[in-house]
Image (cartoon, rainbow, N blue to C red):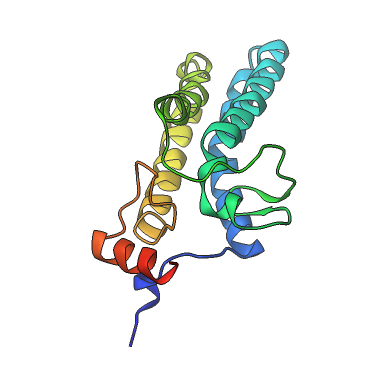
Length: 169
């Protein structure tokens, strides 16, 4: 009998999206709260930068993901649900620009609020703990079942990847 942990994650349900959105909301709102305590301008700017970085991630990283490239309708993955696909799908390996954006955009989002979070130690602890919990949850529950084989964090064993590739030919 195949354990559910051994199956590849070929599709997501709305409750999966809600689960990950709620987990990610904690560090995001913690960062916004820390910034808001000191400046409305910088809080609005942070939200704008977060939206721009999310768009860059969608354009340079997500457009190569099988969840983006295989479906005709709106995007249905753990991070984007019901969103139209504004960019053309680009199946295949990440190129150096895609890789740079995939690492730089999240890094900007993680580092940008630190100035204000250091002024609010309690919120800094909450931010770091919630980010750690979010990352650990993704790593534990998704990376070893992900069908996005080109992702740098993918941990699906090569044998399963090869078997999956053969079955789609």
